[in-house]
Image (tube, rainbow over all chains, first blue to last red):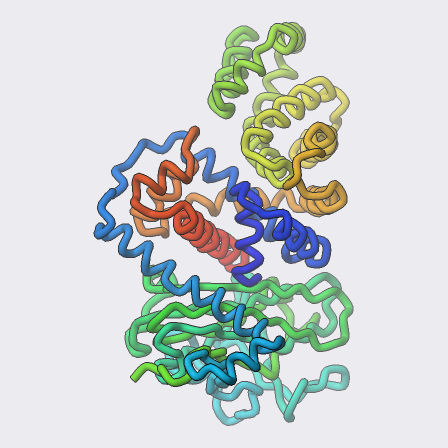
Length: 306
Length: 213
């Protein structure tokens, strides 16, 4: 679920939805089961927060604009206007605005930059995927529960000759892989937007399967992105996730994708894929991943961080 | 925990006083409702005790379900009154008490749609068809909603203290974004954006907990 959808739902619960936004929300909810579930989750959160707030003793909220709380709030929000700018540019690219932009040298242009994911198609069969600890950079790591497969008689790779088969982990409901990427030289100084997609197929699943794509940004150096996920949580500047539901008995590749606005000064991105509720015996059914793509949509290509 | 019939009634109303805003408690304790519940609970104390236990256990899950079907937090309390009364009236028809949560959710779905008929003119209320779809699917995920609720506390705790404070301030009874924005020297729009972002982080955290635990 991208942030724009969350924003619409949030506005609904805040009571600040415009009639036009109401129409967009209705369309979204009518078409997307994931959006409807997200709506219910946010409704549950609304109620949970209201309940906790009733018992919440009033705390001191800094009133100085220079306070640390507001400073951090400002930092959190600083990239938001860029989302609108980027959206405007996308629309602009499809309209007569392009003509105006071409004639006006100060108007930024749209540029797509591929994120150099290592082995995005899992073709490097001689490079095993290591366990997640210690963390590795610029390559896939995970739960040591994966196998590169050339497929069987039913499933063939989406592209190339190989794909990743995600295997169950003992005593766990999920199995995951991640790749930590240094993006300092890719992200414009004022942020941008990153997209992340993966092709997924679930073979032999008798019930709906769930794959989760997660994208996290950090403004710390890649070598400092270490430690457990919990410890890292405080350092995440932005996080987006998308749950991809694959229907039972589906025999087609599905593309799961998500997008996220990048905060300013993003230095590191972590791309994660998790398969949930894997069967204990891999022969019962299999989840395969292939053809992973990521790109950054930059609006100011001349202002790449140095 | 639950002694005689009189104390059970007291617990019952204390409970509702705790979960409902003051304005709703006044409405809830109208003579009609009060008399009805008093008669019913005194007549069947064992059944009442059982009902109370089940209600206490499942009420948060049902209330969260109701929140998805109504426009405002105030509406939740109003609908929950009706749901609780109807559930009590029909409680003796429920044979399998293990299905109480789902059964109460079904009652809630009906009561929400009935309640919405009185709100149909509000320009920002979503269409019945959409809400009914949301409720229909939500009725099948009672256990998921329980897990969501359980995860809220932990995910809220992961926020930096100042953000947690800001978020809870915004949800305090009687709080308004306009006033809170003035106190924090921010524009209301900026504050809405911040709150949206913080909620998104908690929601992502809840989904993460759901997926990984």
